[in-house]
Amino acid sequence: QSVLTQPPSASGTPGQRVTISCSGSNSNIGGNFVYWYQRLPGTAPKLLIYKDIQRPSGVPDRFSGSKSGTSASLAISGLRSDDEADYFCATWDDGLRGYWVFGGGTKVTVL
Amino acid sequence: QVGLQESGPGLVKPSETLSLTCSISNASISGSHWSWVRQPPGKGLEWVGYFYSSGITHYSPSLKSRVTISVDTSLTQISLTLTSVTAADTAVYYCARGGGYGDHFYFDYWGQGILVTVSS
Image (cartoon, rainbow over all chains, first blue to last red; front, side, top):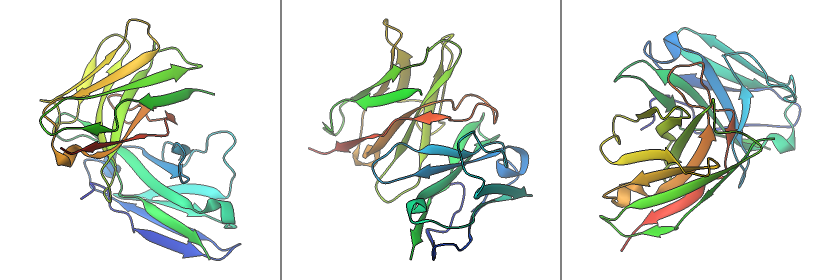
């Protein structure tokens, strides 16, 4: 059971907007930055969003992050077939002397 | 572009020691945190711990009695050692740059991961 809760799957047709949630608690999301990663099959995870809402250079603005309280979200607008991948969230947890925690991952399918 | 490549045995017997290596390219070990993260089949990701270039380490509370992360003398590889393994340690193991102490030290580069199965 992951510390951060994500829906196991999400889907949409090309061009649609898909939103993935990541739910935590005051000791993690509620007080720390959230990060989002994309993992295409057989490849290394790639940083999509850092510090809740920032995009690294090279990441399209179709990807956006948001956070409110103890939950965060990743939105993918203008869905494309090559967005089909696993997406997971990560953040620091202040409990137990501190450690990194992750969501269980959400498989996005482009219909 | 920073490159990370995990290597090591894909099969380890129960009660034995799991040893993996992460080869780093296009980056210096100095000044960065280097982490191991694992994902058991069908489960979410779990942070194992980090090594900082000054020699500081910090491990997951659930694994700290069995895990060691270190750098080799060539300063181009990070190693993971996990003792007394059981089937619960079967997972894809990733190395990553980042994952230091606090939310600013995020993971920015990852390896592709290596599947390690614990079985007799």
